[in-house]
Image (cartoon, rainbow, N blue to C red; front, side, top):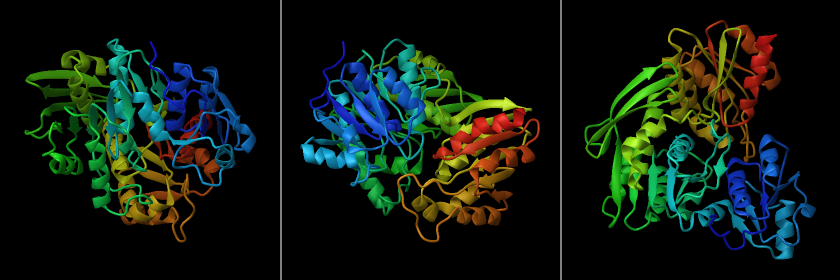
Length: 463
């Protein structure tokens, strides 16, 4: 039986409904029986999936797209104040609700697990959603990417558990009050919203303060996550469970055995050892799975059963996702856009590649991130045998004078990388064809539309 539709959410209108976070909330509301509508800048597979659920999706933003009887207008931080539908909402007196408030309302009355951290949120949330579904718990979930199995980023389930990705980028995760929270890592990112690590820690502390009384904070082995745990250790009624390879970890990773594009992982938790397969390569994905295991156990799921169910996870879109193979060249897609993520995925692929060459097509994401982290991005690209660097994908940002992808190119060359700047994205398939040979791995990397290049590279190689 579906929970009641939250107040003011029976006829919502989403501005930017095609976004990963927005579309997920819209899907869950539609599955609960709400009359959902929205608009997006362009048509997409996501828009079609929403229409299949009975959602009205308008293409383009215009005041007339907003129905006069809409109960609320849902926005994300990416929606600008001059959006015509937002202006129309003000004229009509329709309440404007932030995406995070809408998601928080969907968790009411359910046992929520919120997954936070600078990196790894989507993968860990996905692992939990798939494993719980495999065990028959029928969870609800809202994720920042499409699961490889179910092929969707959100779902309303009839079970009592709701698994949600908790986004720190705009502090919106502070709206949630989970029973269990996971913090995988804490690093400085989202430079337009955070000026220092102190601000980052303050934001994560505010997030953990919302954990329900008697609830649990699961923290990864990352130094920032452990520092957060230290800062909140004295909070009354909060259980802290540490995850990692160090001897003092509560959920201790005893062994990670690479096996091509998979790993076999052994975790000691609550006096028992659990061995299971993680269907993506890399040490960081093994850590994500261990965090998922610890969190699931804290909402009462049998750890031995959950460990085996984690084997059912087969990946999520854009997280080292194999797009195909042509002429002996495998093309893999990565969402990595922060240097830590880039390094982790490149090291994972280097391990999976064996003696094969690793070629990267990298698209920087955001001017502010490039301005602050270009040196570190360049160092990460030095892990590849050769790289192509595209222009910056601006997303929600306006250009910053003097900040271009050339900063990353210069840093990469300084680190000894073989890197080629390419300003015409359409030329990439032909360039890659000239670089790649049988046995090579090509990694398209970034949070923007670089993902579109994977199929085009494969088509070009197939001719």
